[in-house]
Image (cartoon, rainbow, N blue to C red; front, side):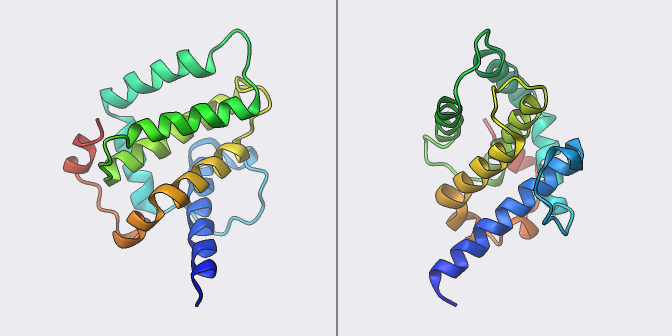
Length: 165
């Protein structure tokens, strides 16, 4: 199979896992895509749950909600994409990649999806969040994720979670 086809399949696998996770957390009516056939990988659910349960993530989430989502004047779509990408880049600015940090990024995407549901992102939809995080993971972390065996090989350990910060 050629590299382009493998890349497209990997992107679709990531997109499917993220959509399924958001549906698992918030309900099917939030995602407009109808091509969902499977539940999210259990290790991804467990990782995001464990990350969300850390005080580091709660503090980070509260700060981002205040600075980005809870503004008097909503930002335009392009600015939201830029801010989300900058937040994601900052999470990996020391070039350390591990499942805990990827889980933090996915949990952050769930926060953004929740804010979309509350219409705090001025026309930015849950589907937009799914597309953004899927492409970000694919482009920036997909090779690392693939060498580690992908979502299904993920073992959630206290060591992964402790290295989130």
